[in-house]
Image (cartoon, rainbow, N blue to C red):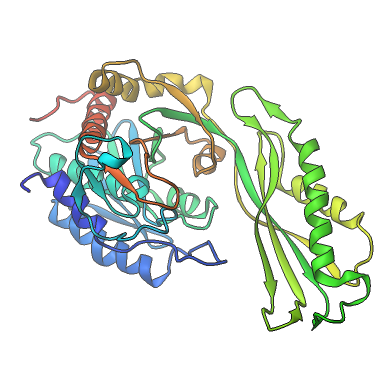
Length: 396
């Protein structure tokens, strides 16, 4: 292949970057795998692309700076940890194939994380090559940022924004949005219930039923609580919610009832609901349960805040909207993301933030692939956005 953009994507798709399967779903920004990926894989590729001004940022992150340094500031952000498509048969192949069995009749690039991370990193590398070869610099500051957020929090973005030399006027988080401009989403918090009792042989359950009985009661109570929580609804963002997504018992030993359990609940949040209040609500629900001979506590875990793009800043989206319409032939669609991601963090600091990127068509645990046509369309849209934002001519 002689296409630098496609070459970059295939190259990156062959480098592991996934959060391992297991009960611990979070990954620290200084995890050895991410340190290697960011410092030994991505950073040298930006240098090879001609990026001369690389800014070191906290939490194993960096930004590439282009422009005159005066005027408006645009930041494009790509992420590194891969969190889905965990059961791909050959996750790091980087193969190019046509998934006819999935109803697609055009070539795609396969690899775990190609839609969540790698296509966006490849786009930033292509933009770096384009600008490094251009005789003109953007009349302002363009920041191409590499973000290591893998803890379902905003810690990496907040650390990045605290260290950047200039505050972005618009921040675009590259994420698979189906070419829609995501202008809002619900927040989320991990709420954990810890149950501590006494291990016993399965032939003699402990008084009160022990850990299993307590866990069953908690799950039933939360199911009832969810009916109340879901009555809080936003017409654009949807409803609040609390559901279990992980239940872990320990120890797992032959014919042994466990001595502890950890139940993790996904609590979706709308603007106006504080994570601390949601944790207190769950604590009150658990405290009302009977005595199972166990200690039961509630812990408030990692949080991503709700996001809603400020209506007074709508004009900032015109460069992106115009580039989308020019490339796709249809008006840009402003959408609301069904999940939670990182936009709420920068928005909480007053930085106008949206999410944008290619469609994601694979199964959440199965194959991850992106159409090559979509790869090229995203890169052209981002180039057009830069040109529109800074008002500079687009080099060929």
